[in-house]
Length: 330
Image (cartoon, one colour):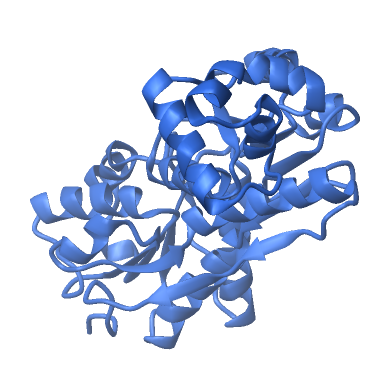
């Protein structure tokens, strides 16, 4: 700071005010900025953090494959953090077993704490990880992205239940009575909520659910596997737990000579960009994952600032009707 001050012809105290957000006149500020650029000066963030007892850094723990939803959430987390002057440390865990989940998640959270982050956002799509969140909730503010709402830490999540309810109701309103559900992985919170929405919509219409076809992952390969084996005469409508599964299922049925909406109707969840450009364009339920990530950061920063619990926020789902759904075939 003394070097910057000499070059800018101001005192080191003025340079200090410049870097700590105090008042500095416009002309003086311009001279300091020019001196900083010429000298290649960078603040010592480690020393600054020791002084202010804050790192302006948050941790983001992402679980599961880096698919569309996770990538969009990460984009939202990054955007929200940058807009608030925060940095993000990200860890991604692709978990295989429940035992791995608990030990790996605990280790990742402890690693964040070792970096002295100001708070942590945790994507918790896997069942049974609530107790692990409590492991760090007493040390730093934590916001979870999970349909399994917590009494110990703050939470926000997309409305998977209403997404499933809305998608199934759309098919029922078109006249479908035999509706197949392609469910997501059995160990994910979203899968259970979307399936429950399907079952409740079927029950309120006085219909009987068909056997649920479970997918091992949220990908097109899983959907294609079912599409290659399913009996096309057993259903007229399909609710797919996400768009990628719907893409694979429709692709496999097309190879067998069955297309939507001529032979069946299909609706997905997510509203991926590719949904609009499929043949036919896919009817889907839009989930704003970027907004979910931004909301998590906003809640976390407010908790850091005030120390007070934040009310849970549910990001609404929106039906987007395209050409893949229509009245059932005669």
